[in-house]
Length: 378
Image (cartoon, rainbow, N blue to C red):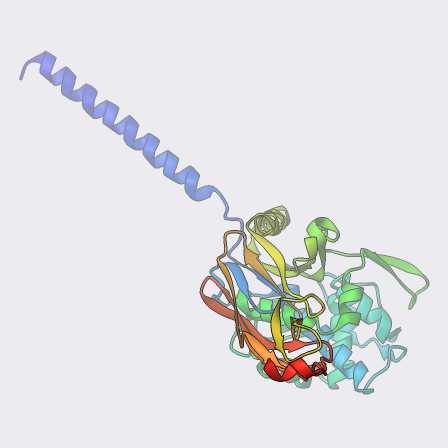
């Protein structure tokens, strides 16, 4: 083999190795780029889901666990089992509990009201523990209540509770609280039925009075952005969760992020998806029971035609390019007399060939018979 040919072959091998290294390095850079999150879901407050990523995988909940703790607390308040001004005595476990917390020492008496605020706003683990013990009597009983409530609300298979706080096993000696993004979405839908809880969770700051007036600040830094209010954040090492509600442009929605590597990426994902939702979808008032949807001919009546209405209001969030069809099933004419509220037909509303609503067609006034000689010929 000539020296010239050998040189060419060596050059080709050398260049190939450089290209291979460049490709390998490029792949490494791509792999090193952190994903925005492990799982995500966005849906409206009626249960319709618009975007989802890996929504069924069971993942650590962290402090999102406290949503159920607060729901059960408010349920106990509504049932008269406990009161806001009840005083909870801090035990040794509360006093020594780590992670996010408020100051307390063994023997301190703290009101349920202050414990709720500290749990919902500041995500204080010791406050959540105090609520659980006060409501359930002991932690095992309260955790059983949490799982029973999840089952009752239809997401028992989507969330598994082991603590009232979401703290990891090495801090509690108990199992890990886990759930899917779909489960947290369903949990958040249920939480919206506790308006007093949502009201507290939506506050950027609040005062506590158990140790002299002091302020706590909400760990949810997205409050007020893109219509966001509530609901709960969660954090473990290199693991950030959040569930929020938004009413931007009257498009009521819930967005959930689980497993973001940083708080910034978690919040970025939420904002990006809500903005995309606002761009791709719109809320449409399809029916208003006070606005006529047509008219019908009246035979033998004091008037020749009468306006007709739907029996209810209906609005829906739909994609901008949706195909909408409204079908009325009614007679072309009807004989008098007619009466206010009388049903004269039915309607069906289709979006992309799927029935999304159906109801009755009614009239909203009384129509008497035409009272003269010529009415017998009609």
